[in-house]
Length: 424
Image (tube, rainbow, N blue to C red; front, side, top):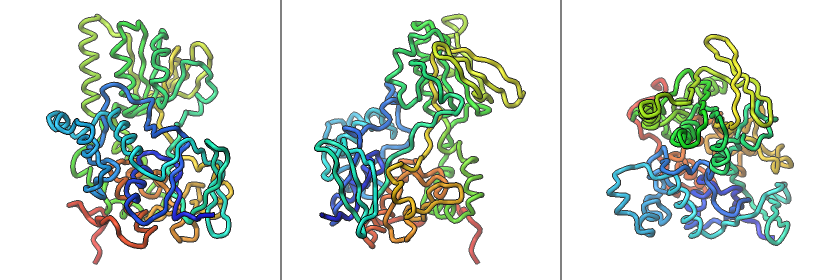
């Protein structure tokens, strides 16, 4: 049986970018995706929402600006490059980004959809990847794997037993939106951009819906996403080098401190929410909404209406909040896929059981560049792991490891500031 150079598992933006960048190369790659199409956060494609990174953070541009898979080429081929130019915004619509990803995928070879990987084994010097899909069970073999399976939704322990049809995670918000709007009360739980976008979306229809709208966040305030230019220098090759070289305990400490760098809310959206609240108070007299900061949901019970046991941290006081609809905008958390169980002994894990990637994003014990990860390296590479703007950089590293040469130039230093102490 043919042994390929690599198999990519999952086709989100990161592995799709790898497919685009390896397409012109002498590499025999195959990408397997369980869904029928590229499906990037479909539950959050709310009308009018935009990306939080500029359009240059596409699949290829920061590694290869001449690639035919660039966002600008997508605009040109779809006849929208001049309207985008006149719009004068670096931030494309979120639905537009989804359309771009699908446009690119249709133009690539080696992508197979509706193939769910069920097992990976090590056989005769190669990884045997078994998948289910059209045509039944199949096994493909490759010398390397690139894991791009994404981060599953994270649900707080207190809410994991709730079964109501009006309880959902933000990842499926649009699917549940109309049912939620039929509730007498809706509560959004979460601190970041997704929570803010959902709250803003529901706030817009609060008069017509006749519902009460609550927003509960653990954060002491509604933090804006830090987007100043010297802070953005931390999304750089040299900062990843610096972060990766720190002790594990210090990296964990910094990841907690860095949440405002990638989990905050767009400042314009915060201001827009205030402006809408101001206008609605003027026109309605009072707005049936409450915003709770410093609050954690510790208990959740019920099937029709949900009773939330909430604790206010600074006062150390608990109270109850009753809601019919509940949206958990509580983020995502990486889990090692079950299909890797048979090869766990070949992978690097840290003392806490997390995958432990090297600087080149490889996680195989042998150090031979056999298995690479996409967006599973938060603990070792920092907050740039989920950043679309660093995806092309990461893929350039992975391609260099797979080919033994620097196909796409990898910048070593781009910033004005120094992150570590000067070397003698």
